[in-house]
Length: 51
Image (cartoon, rainbow, N blue to C red; front, side, top):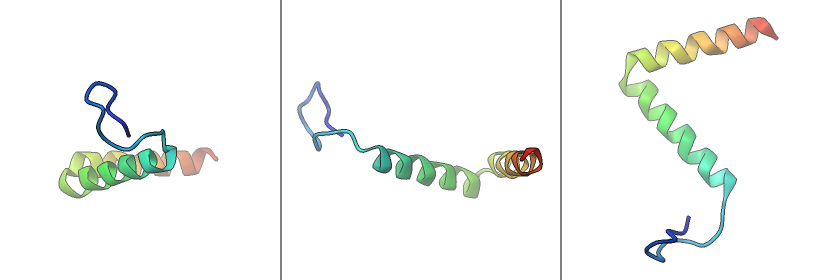
Protein backbone atom coordinates (compact mmCIF):
# COMPACT_ATOMS: atom_id res chain seq x y z
CA UNK A 1 0.00 0.00 0.00
CA UNK A 2 1.21 3.48 -0.78
CA UNK A 3 2.52 5.70 2.00
CA UNK A 4 0.88 9.06 1.29
CA UNK A 5 3.40 10.97 3.38
CA UNK A 6 6.60 9.48 1.96
CA UNK A 7 5.31 8.65 -1.51
CA UNK A 8 6.71 5.12 -1.30
CA UNK A 9 5.16 1.71 -1.75
CA UNK A 10 2.71 0.28 -4.23
CA UNK A 11 -0.29 2.36 -5.28
CA UNK A 12 -3.81 1.17 -4.67
CA UNK A 13 -5.84 -0.67 -2.10
CA UNK A 14 -5.76 -4.47 -2.14
CA UNK A 15 -8.25 -6.02 0.33
CA UNK A 16 -7.04 -9.58 -0.36
CA UNK A 17 -3.47 -8.60 0.41
CA UNK A 18 -4.62 -6.97 3.65
CA UNK A 19 -6.56 -10.11 4.58
CA UNK A 20 -3.44 -12.20 3.94
CA UNK A 21 -1.42 -9.96 6.26
CA UNK A 22 -4.09 -10.23 8.95
CA UNK A 23 -4.17 -14.03 8.70
CA UNK A 24 -0.38 -14.20 8.80
CA UNK A 25 -0.38 -12.08 11.96
CA UNK A 26 -3.04 -14.26 13.59
CA UNK A 27 -1.10 -17.37 12.68
CA UNK A 28 2.09 -15.96 14.16
CA UNK A 29 0.26 -14.90 17.34
CA UNK A 30 -1.44 -18.29 17.73
CA UNK A 31 1.81 -20.20 17.26
CA UNK A 32 3.81 -18.06 19.68
CA UNK A 33 1.27 -17.20 22.37
CA UNK A 34 -0.90 -19.88 23.99
CA UNK A 35 -3.52 -17.41 25.24
CA UNK A 36 -4.26 -16.32 21.67
CA UNK A 37 -4.48 -19.93 20.52
CA UNK A 38 -6.99 -21.09 23.11
CA UNK A 39 -9.16 -17.99 22.63
CA UNK A 40 -9.22 -18.57 18.87
CA UNK A 41 -10.13 -22.24 19.34
CA UNK A 42 -12.89 -21.38 21.81
CA UNK A 43 -14.23 -18.71 19.46
CA UNK A 44 -14.41 -21.17 16.58
CA UNK A 45 -16.18 -23.74 18.77
CA UNK A 46 -18.74 -21.22 20.03
CA UNK A 47 -19.41 -19.96 16.51
CA UNK A 48 -19.78 -23.53 15.28
CA UNK A 49 -22.27 -24.34 18.00
CA UNK A 50 -24.22 -21.14 17.37
CA UNK A 51 -24.65 -21.97 13.70
